Image (tube, rainbow, N blue to C red; front, side):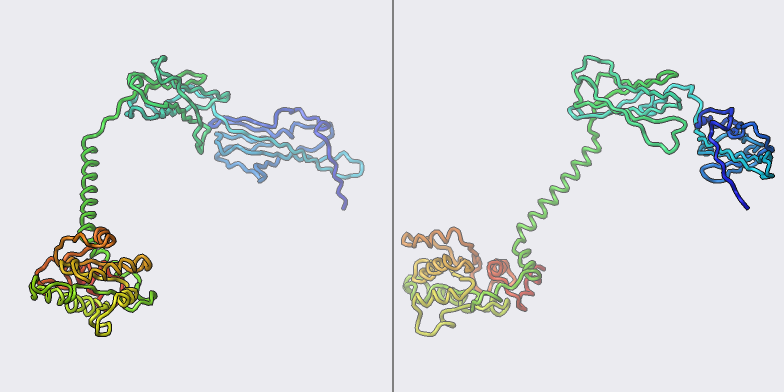
Length: 459
């Protein structure tokens, strides 16, 4: 079996159809499509041929309810948009003129593209927004964009025109900056929708009395829509709503601020109890606080009642350790208890102060006017060298500063934190009182069982 393939040029095929390879059809109408290859004949005697149709590289068969497939054409009753595509038709003929009893099969293929189109619109543009006449509320002094949304029906030679016009051509706002853009739509066969935007850099009083006109035009006619500007007034209900929210937020802010201000110490103690690290673990110091108070030889017994002194001494050596050591777990340094008997020189006091994290001074007229004031002066000099050391002043009784007070002590009395003792007896104040909260606020953070009182004391 031998097969011979002969290719013949289009010019030699003697085709009567030399039209365009693009075919336009109108959606909704009927159309008969002929195979261009069936019109070709080179004069040879051939048997009648048949046509095979393809669409988009697939065999095409037209359903009977949609049309008829004839010998060399397709007749479609009603054309839809989906009928568009690339069509190919193969016209097959058999040539029996060969002297060698060889039958030649001739296949002529024609390819063309069907484009969907519509009848030109018979209507002018349809302005979707603004619809006829519209009033827009604006704020004076603010920039503004006005938009005109227009739908144009289908036209083969499509040339849309949209423009914003204004009735007052001499407005101080000047010319409008305008721009059009097409809106993407899934089915634009029936036309296109455009959005035309004009910009005002600033809305003025003149603009409120002006009329803005959207003018749209196509080959059929034109359409217009009117836009007016109106100054936007504050809605009383909205104003009251905003004012109420503002007042509530301010009250809440001041309420929270007042609460924090009043209970700041409690808040700090609560935070320390759960989140702060123990300050006493890595500083290598022996005591949490050095306690200094007026000694027996710091005053003249003939001038001051003996009972008042012992009450002050009892506060320093009994009640202060009872609360800070037994309740809250601190370790205090008391001269009479922790330093060898026989008294201590100023050098010894300085040495012990440096071994403490805090230094507590119980101030009273006896203390300020007695020899114990030099312990305060020594501690002030120590904090110049050791920044971790902090001083706590307890005003046990009111006093007046004597003229002989060292200047460094005078300055310290004005800048150092002072906690006032306001009760008459050392037994009048509970360990959970405000006074002890203030003392603990200035003491170092130390995690002991006693620190659980920080939370309980808030109740």
